[in-house]
Picture (tube, rainbow, N blue to C red):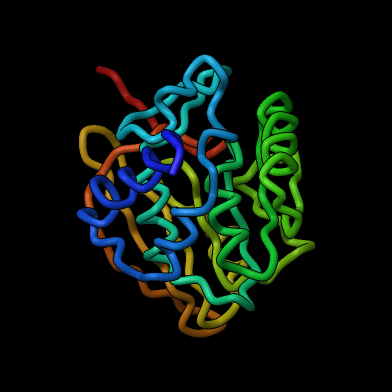
Amino acid sequence: MNALEQARFNMVEQQIRPWQVLDPAVLHTLQHIAREIFVPSAYQALAYTDTEIPLGHGQTMVAPRIDARLMHDVALKPSDKVLEIGTGSGYLTALLADRSHHVVSLEINPELHAKARTNLQGAGISNVDLRMADGSAGALDAGPFDAIVLGGSVYEVPQALLDQLKVGGRLIAIVGEEPVMQATLYTRTSASAWDHKVLWDTTAPRLLGFKQPSRFTF
């Protein structure tokens, strides 16, 4: 085991398992997807640390345990078609692609979109449709989806995204405002009804293009 493989093993055992990510299939994915491929070269030494990593353009990679828990809690099946909002570096995209049939991933920033394409090619991931788009509108032409995963935080989940779930489909997002945001799982229970369940507290960088709360000052 080389140093990077050891660091990846340590990440899974010391950061991710303690965060209640215990599904063997998910742990296997985390163990064999090389996160260093997705980290900017200046931050290679931090690839497996429990910290956010700058991507430039005001965006960051969340700590690995956040991506791992999102992927775990959305409970993907090998047949699932997935929509990801916010490609970023492509790391969560790669995790989702490894656990599903196909991923459509939307990124609003052209430089991050291009870099993610290079990263995913470098990792040998081919079952992904990368699109440069405002994620708040989703991908109506490619839906409906079995699962939708938001890779950053939003004030609220737009109805347009919930509408793109199949009945029985799940959407997971980090919702709210600083200092407390909550990972929330939405499930479409019928053509016109959705349930939601708050899973855990965390914080994450904002996704661009989503509606923010009105600010009134007196």
